[in-house]
Length: 118
Figure 1 (cartoon, helix red, strand yellow):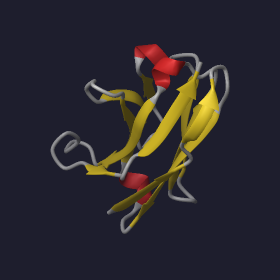
Figure 2 (cartoon, rainbow, N blue to C red; figure 1 turned 120 degrees about the vertical axis):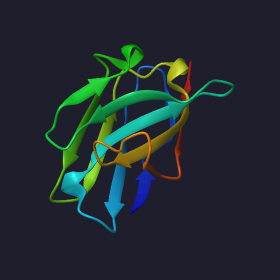
Figure 3 (cartoon, helix red, strand yellow; figure 1 turned 120 degrees about the horizontal axis):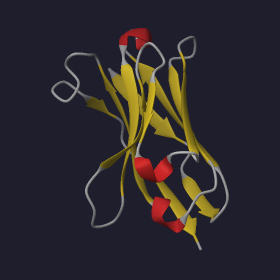
Figure 4 (cartoon, rainbow, N blue to C red; figure 1 turned 90 degrees about the vertical axis):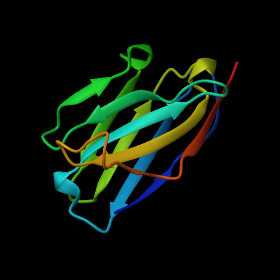
């Protein structure tokens, strides 16, 4: 499976960005999708996830500001990020996995940089 992430960029605090992750090479509908992020000097952390049934989960720091969705017809998972803060700066990675193998057989996209200026 291949993942192509897009949509990162530079935005001012309070602004919005939308990240997209396109999956190819397999049947999108069976994958749980997630966005992780890694700030400079910090460990990678979960931003948001959506499983194949549409159940979502968010990291505490993004709750109420980010929204993850999926379009099975377009093989795409999208992360809408609103009210961005400088601490949201980092590289955002898309992850796909098939339950119950998540954490063991994950596929990762190449990462897209999000920079939020104050």
